[in-house]
Structure formats: structure tokens, C-alpha cells
Length: 329
Image (cartoon, rainbow, N blue to C red):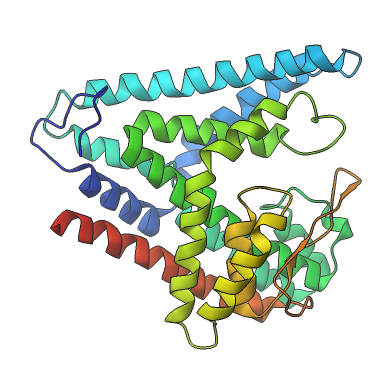
């Protein structure tokens, strides 16, 4: 697999091998706290830059048109900076026979498989201790108001996060790495970070974050559907989960989600577990209406979070198997 606008690996290493190594590094090491106490995580750097631009340019007194223009300019600057840096790094590394190893390490920092698993598992453990602890834990991984969540709401939020972020934290980075190398992966993470910070349908970000939200929608069209399909396949191999219900819920409900992409993995996970996910939620004090994904029970619990994580791990294992099969073909 050759990406025309990037130099090939000098020793002919396959990009699939680099991706598999990146996935392995992330699965084993995740995001080591000791490392990111010393140096900032790339996504944290993106987030801080977005926050600075948003604070300076998202003027509530400006006209909607001006806010949209400045929001679009923010998106352009962030994506250009992330992509340019990644391109320069890739070009330099591919001048050396060992450069692909460093590239794999760099790519692993933009994959969130281990980190997401650990965060969601922490929510399940915290919910064991009570609603208050569960709210504190789930606030680390979702943007909705934690005070608005009861026990089942906390569990649903954690499961939805596992499903949706399997798409945009694992599948999408891997997809764009295969399509456009590390620059494509960096561009995607910039888009996704922008969307997560300013893409909410709130009065503050409705105009400023419009371009970011639309770009994220486009970037996730294929990854979200791939992720939903992988969850369905994983459900077929896991006792107590239903691939049939996962498929039916995904095909019936995904298009009803307020996001054109998030509904695919969320509906698949809901059907697999016999739950109803999504629905109305609150962001920054504002209620956002949303359709329910799946027609099962709404009273999810910490046991359901752990069941979702088993499916999540199974879907991740399928990714590795498919990549290995690609090497052998």
C-alpha cells in the first residue's frame, strides 16, 4: 500500500505492519501518565490551541456570520498545523530504515483503545461506590452535564462513550492512517478534537463550531459504519450478546440519531446488549433532544458497562485479525 504524496518506507515495510505495531503499543502502554507529565500529549496540545482560539475569537457579541468565519479560520489553522507537523515528521523519518518504528510510536499516541477502555472501566468501578462517584468518573469521558445523570444515565453515558469512541478513537484514526499516513491521522485527530470542543449544538457554539462539526461528520462517515459492523460481528462471538438484535437496531435506529455517524456504533451496542441508549441529554445546561437507539431497557447498570467492554475488546481483536489477514493476502 503506497501513499503517493509520502515517500515509501526505505526497507519496504508495509503500512499495515506499522499500524499493527501502533495498535500493540497503545494496547500495552496506553497513555502513560509519567510520560505525559513530562511532555504534553499531542491531543492535549491540540485542545489547548483550540481553547485559546475559541476564547479569543468566539465573541458572543459578534454577528453569526462573523462567528462562523472565525470558527472556520480556527479549523483551518488547527488542521493545517497538525497536518504540516505530521507531514514533516513523516518525511524526515522515512529517510531512515528505522524510521517506521518511530512512526509507529507516534501513531500509537493518536489511538485511544487502551485509554478509552480504562476510563470506561473506571466508571463501572466508581458506580459500584454510588451515583456521586459515578458522576465524577463519567465527567472525564463525556461532555454532558454529570449532575443531570442518575445511575442508569451514568451507565448509558459510559456505554455510549465506549461505542462512539471506538469509532472515532480507534477505527477512524486507523482508517485515516491507512489512507494518508501519519498526516491523515493527525488531520483527523485535529478535526475530532475541534468537534469535541466546539462542535456542540449549544447557543455558544452553534455558529463558531459549525464547520468543525460538519467536517467531523464527513471524516467519520466510513469509520462509524465500520465500527458498527465490527460491534455486530463481535456480538456474535460473545455469550449473552445478540448480533441479530445489534444488526436490527443499527439498521433501524442509526439514521435517527442527531449525529449522522454516532448512531451506528451506539445502536449496534444497544441492540447487542438489549438496551436503549442515547435519547435526550443535557450539555452546558441546555437539553438536546435525541432519539433512543435500541428498544431494550433504559435502566442500564455497572454490569452492563462491563458487558459493553467485553464487546469493545472483541471488536478491537477483530481489527487486529483483519489487519493481519491483509498482510497475508
